[in-house]
Image (cartoon, rainbow, N blue to C red; front, side):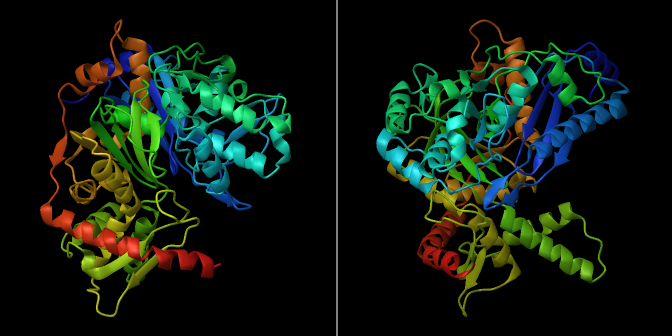
Length: 535
């Protein structure tokens, strides 16, 4: 059933819509949804992080010009489809890549360039904090960045009045509120699941750890306030409205939901916030999140413990690298085709090459790849060195070549998931897939099912991704009934029984992936040597 253009135009002009905007690693996307939570318009802005003095970053200009362009393109989409303009919106929300470090002084000035989740210069800090808390503190967590700055004696630390994530920063500048959704906050600092707040014991341990530095702050007072899904997180200010909409049409006063990280919005967009459900997001980075029934038995430094937007415990296996190297090889084939004068349709090229992979040997014919552009935490890789290797008698053909890169994109993730499934015996009823890897039908889903040893479902709406997810969280805040949980709202009012297209893992694929991952583990010494030798 198609969209009723006249009814949608009326909803837009009467402020009955909800807007979600997410800052992904390569794209900023806006999704406008109607009263039935279905997307009615969108806009996107492509951007890239940059390596500045050894630090992965985006500039403040990147952030604001990207946001404004993304919103303007959404407005243009609304104008083209419905001949409408936007002055009012029922609610909105902002999300972004989790973790990282944005530190500000008392004048609200950024003290050092934004350090993104991709930076792995925090090894010493993460190890010391993990040992102190007896709780896994990954390299990319905000507190790891802060403590590494302290260990490195960075001058700016004494002047920190506030530090937050990218989503927290955007929300602060648009609403004036220094708050953060609990899912994003759980990637800054460990959460007390019962109190739905930062872990007070660990805050005190951190303060005692750095007491000899005599900083004029304590940890809690420089972090954003924690909010759970559905709570009031402020409204769009006059200044915020002008920052977002350079045309000046958007009115202030719009309710804004708690800002979330891309993990939380992925859970919302795939209806996987209930226990024993999970989702896997596969794009520039890849992470699988399983909502747990209980805490894990052991401390695993390969597994992050985060939360759903409602504050339930989630085990997350996260790898910094996924499709970047895979995309680079596809672009190489594009160059090859263009050298022959062939005009290349990228969607078709991805489809042809991905489907070719399914013709390959289940174990990839003894080929091996490491698609690492940056360091990893699940496996002992500190820097990126994309690498392809084979023996003289490996079965080197296009099908195996493509299959190898698809497997390799999920190599670190599989090692992490094996810990949860094989060691912790975590039960998984269903996993939903979303992200760029799943844009080509069947292929990414089938490879992922083999990696996870579990059925993987993909919904038609999965392509909308985290921008739709944060729009749903804003919709929940606006429309929920008394005592209605987020899980119930999503199941009953958003997805209404939609289970998506489900694919069970193929036995041969699983066996082949197991063989590949053993070769992958043995070859890690080669990747480590490449880091040492290739400068």
